Length: 331
Image 1 (tube, rainbow, N blue to C red):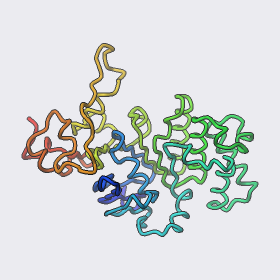
Image 2: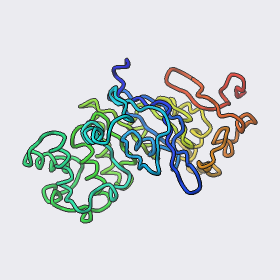
Image 3: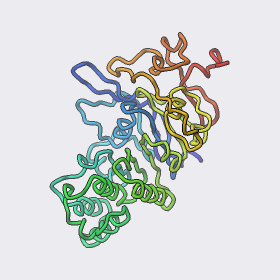
Image 4: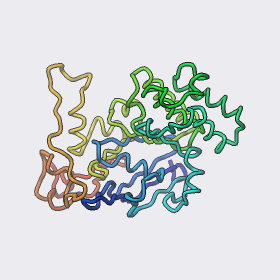
């Protein structure tokens, strides 16, 4: 693919939050590209910077206390960080859609579900009320809500958690966005509905060339849905590669730890899962070296003093680890 296929380009993104205990560094020099029709997974523990990265792309970081301290976000050739709020309102919903992690705080409790979908369609698709209603009911049907005609007129509090999540997904997909960001989109759903939602996202990707960023803890979903994977830890990208490279040949000790801590079908029943010991660092005072150093079985002296740059393993695979540096190669 050439540069014309790049829908999103994030370069050296830095996001911090002012708190009473000091400045917390949420995202530290994150860089990645996303191609048209590509599905990219961002994985990592809670607090690794996944959701902050996604919210920065949508320009939804609350300011204060949040602030973008550096970097650029290019979406379809335009620097999102230089857009006014009015310009962003025209982009959100139409060109960018986001499925939020917590639908109860994302849906408006004073408006019916149907109105929340039709508002998006009337504003961005220039539909009249009748067209918007038909489209909204169709979207509710597509995401697996029973009796969509009836649900159209109900409020969020009348929905279960899983139903609210499906309604949130219907809003995000209503305008067939160029970029869909899904932050833990199937957390509150049972496996049957989860499969339906993932199938819906795949269909959107194939039919319209929609680019997807999937933020999740579920590596099974990653294996099923995504082309490439970014692994984040303490606000930084520590490894990136194709799905096969990350699952079959992980390089960073943190990525290996994530994979070891999950059950596998080919794993003997009596073989225990191996958790990653320790806790992530305090991002109000991040370490000067590798942030994973205190939890790593392979840590060397240099790891405590200087963080490694990204080491290239192939055209698509790189990791941030001294083990793979030419001067400190693992034997």
